[in-house]
Image (cartoon, rainbow, N blue to C red; front, side, top):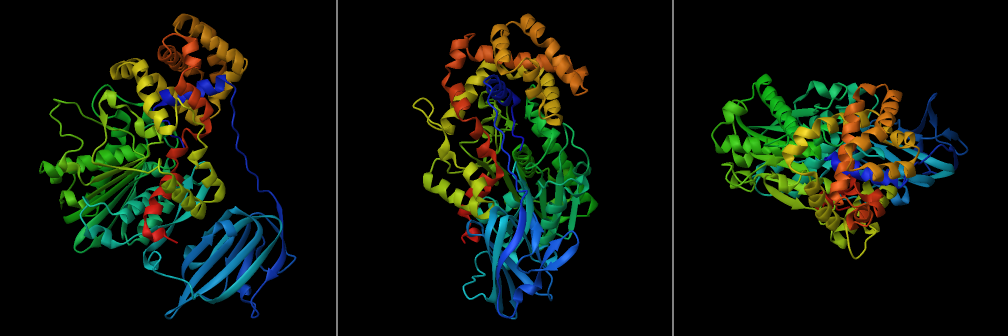
Length: 612
């Protein structure tokens, strides 16, 4: 997931880490031969209703069967009313449940000698299936019978909907979302944890990774359909190659108690070049890049209302994550302003809308709006915004930018994830392990933070580093006028060519020569550009984008100059800075708290629907 909401921070970390020669490469291979060495089946051979799916077709499940990874088991028997799937990942146990009359039945598979982190389940098209990777010979213990211990009240089955989402960098996962129309029978000013968790799931469904760009919206549209939306739409960019200003938007609507409920979903959990707009602060007012998200979301909302002839009483839920969390927060504020000022029909459409009927949710939300004393604008905590909820993690560096010292704000009520509470963090990790996998949960464990007396945790690092780096940067206007354009170009190139900065360091002769050249020339623009000019030109020429050499050189000098000012012109002060030292010691954890898996784990641990 690209989380560089201010590239100045990311570029600073990248240069320091690259100069120190630090490289972290995570690889994981599951390319094993597989063989069913042992099969335990019910006496009536119930497993015959399941088949192995192979490139040549479906084949029977039999001992001694050789297979290629990933192994896939698919139900192929008579039609049943499948209602639920349960995965106990740590034990390698998968249970599919079906209902016959008033009785629930369980098909349980206990898988042994397989990679449990690779297990994926599906009930698409009412057809249960499992895929996994086997570590050589594996076994299956299959049983089928009445599900005597099954409790359908653990998340109402009628309200449970499976969706697919990309959790970077691990891949696509299938997760449950719980939805009820009752969510909209309480005012938005009252926080409903189950509704907030659903809003996160709906947002996560918008970030689905697939090779066919035309199918990127399939997961979010399916979830909207599954919860009863009879009208759905996406904007054009969802099926186009991303640009700096792209915003993917999905919309759906359904009727509840005489009101039209509209769901506005802004894809912020898996995106590409458009993350570059995060560094577009602008000279004044709301964050320029996040305002682009707001404007496209509002445009799509207005078009959807108009195109579908929606009138009368309405309710609106808007949700976003990261970049689009900022956009969702701005949209919710825009809607709330229209209501407070009596301008709903002018700004939104021919609908009736109250503050209590606008549900604004945003997750890992950067600051996005602007407020200044004496500006005449309503305070971001004004009562008109009491229907808006934004989630932050004190360990997530993204939620600290852009800085308060530039006047940036978020609107509404803050919900702070309890990252500093060890019991709450343990509950989060348990949820991540259960729903996503043990290896992902291990990566989310922030107790691995390398602390010292100077910087005890990520919160202290964020609270100390961010104000200091922006003080060194200077004013917002200086950044917008003198730096922003070059950074936008640099980050869009990095988005298209992920190893560009690494190649640049190599072209400089390696990490050590790069570091020495940087130290000897930073603070001196002429010397810096003379030293690195030809290196930048050669690097960009190798990627076919040498026309941007001057922009990249300017941007790199701005980063080097930021380092110079941050350290007060002293190399010794830079290398001994407690925040720089902490960032180097914890490079692999810096963006971990921004991962959707962690946010999902925390919210699911609050939600009774996920109590099992």
